[in-house]
Image (cartoon, rainbow, N blue to C red):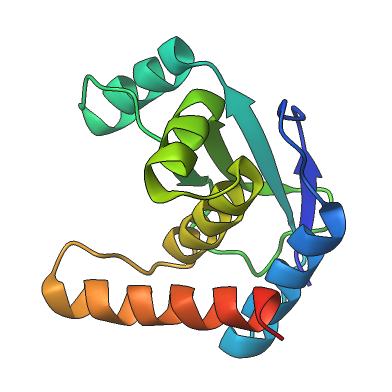
Length: 146
């Protein structure tokens, strides 16, 4: 199970039991034992745009950024912040409208996506995209369509 801290609570509803379920499914599906902390942070568009520009050289707002701070996780403890997921509340709202979802559901989809990025999954190549998308779909279905 993943240990996490919700650093800033968004304006839309977030159910910590659902977050726990997402992390449990990911842990079980990928056989991951995690003993460090993931921070989940919500920022305004200007702040996330600055981070996107500084870390990815992309001068645009994005929905989510995923960061991992260690190459070797073996000696970390529960208190060590190993990962952070930075999310844009405005992008979540806009994408929820675009995809006909509640903001909360869009958040959960982005959370799954971001955690997979942190676990070294990517979607730069077509094959990688298919693998990651299939895994996202399996996790989402396991959590929400039991």
